[in-house]
Image (cartoon, rainbow, N blue to C red; front, side):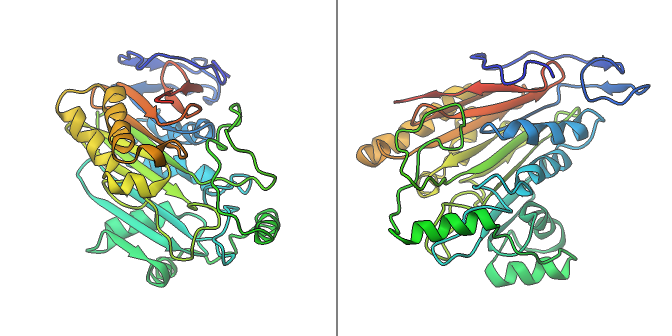
Amino acid sequence: MINRRKFLSVSSIAGASVLLAKDSFAGLPALETFIITGNPIVISTWDFGIAANAAAWEVLKKNGRALDAVEQGVHVPEADPKNRSVGYGGNPDRDGKVTLDACIMDEFGNCGSVAALEHIMHPISVARKVMEKTPHVMLVGEGALQFALEQGFQKINLLTKESEEAWKKWLKTAKYEPVINIENKSFSPKKLPGNQYNHDTIGMLAMDAKGNLSGACTTSGMAYKMHGRVGDSPIIGAGLYVDNEIGGATSTGVGEEVIRNVGSFLVVELMRQGYPPEEACKEAVMRIIKRKPDTAKEIQVGFLALNKKGEYGAYAIQQGFSYAVCNAANQELLVKGKSYY
């Protein structure tokens, strides 16, 4: 592996047209050559973004479309039962039901979304079907499930034994207290109650060899939320936004505050005004802090952005936010994002 879990403070890595031979980096099949004509790159939130990026890179390195890359990339955490904040094995709501939210957006401004979806392994793919097969942007609840089944998706039980046991343990106190940065395995959160639970998502942004951008965001939402609660992840402009002329942005953390500030759209608009990605993310974070300074001290919200030049950056309220980067030069970068506190 190349630079496995190496933390960098850089905000971007320059790229050029590259000819990748069979021995260029680990994971390429023997006797096979790939031509990368532009500067493909994929970035995603948190440590588990490394594995997700690897799947997305399999598409990008073959000159595939960014939209296909982000869909395939986030499939990895969606199907990982050990990931308690995304998809299968995600922590349930307070009624014991695993409900999933996801959205996807392509280079043409097309987008699709599902919210409060139960029983489906890959909500991101259902969101893409909503985008491509319906005149709508978002389907929710039973309607989203009905549509998924009509499209051939299989109904499964998303509640694993481990998640069910954690939920039953939580019921003894039913105290709702999300833990900051529990998704980052190398960072010690400020709060570590006996029954740890998390509240997060994977947001992914990619640029392909043609210079086109797409993004995806998918989550099981806050653990032990009220049944029917929807966060920012499936909301275009909040959890994700892509403008192929400018760049894309995604968010992570407590979705209510992201929704109130239309966070990802704000980041992209700031980049339109000339802000570099990190500075745009910082300004969006500062809007949250300024409006609710007392609330901001107790929560985590982070933004991740990628512009049309392939430059990337992130900023969060609290320390400990990490994001993964994958391009032709480096396959497994884990970058420590800057923060206010």
